[in-house]
Amino acid sequence: MAINLRVNGTSRSVPAEPDTPLLYALRNDLELNGAKFGCGLAQCGACTVLVDGKAVRSCVTPISTVTTNEITTIEGLGSPSKLHPLQQAFIDEQAAQCGYCISGMIMSAKELLDRNPRPSERDVRAALAGNLCRCGTHNRIVRAVLRAAQASWRTRT
Image (cartoon, rainbow, N blue to C red; front, side, top):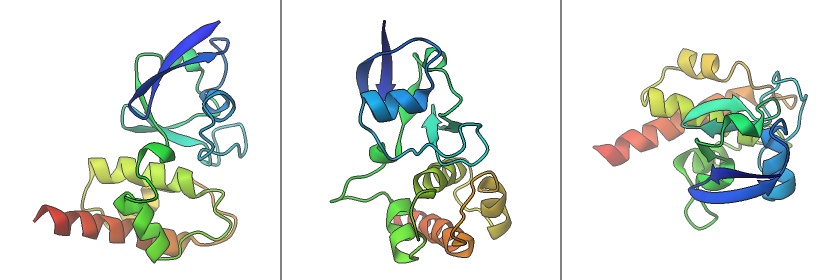
């Protein structure tokens, strides 16, 4: 069975059953490997993507529930030649150690900044509380999100 999805601004068709987790379609069929399989239980955040701008755990989201939505993965935020401000801030703050959690962190941060462009440190920590990092770079990750917010405000004014 073919299921149509709109991913990173492009309509795509995937050969899958309706109950297939979105993560599997993204990684296996569309070769978008930014979202990672972590726990498979929506508890670690490594698989986070945006669905209509809202951060969701793709490991437990059946593709049949997102066929009319816009799905954005880390690959849809920026490109190597034009990084998204969040991606650049994570590099500048050296916020990644192993990198496994980072795409999920960035996608959760993107939802936060879209909703609250001037977050406090407390806001950032609350927004990222469901994303786990075993390497312990949480302080750098928080600094990166605050840096990206600051950079976005500078370009608006």
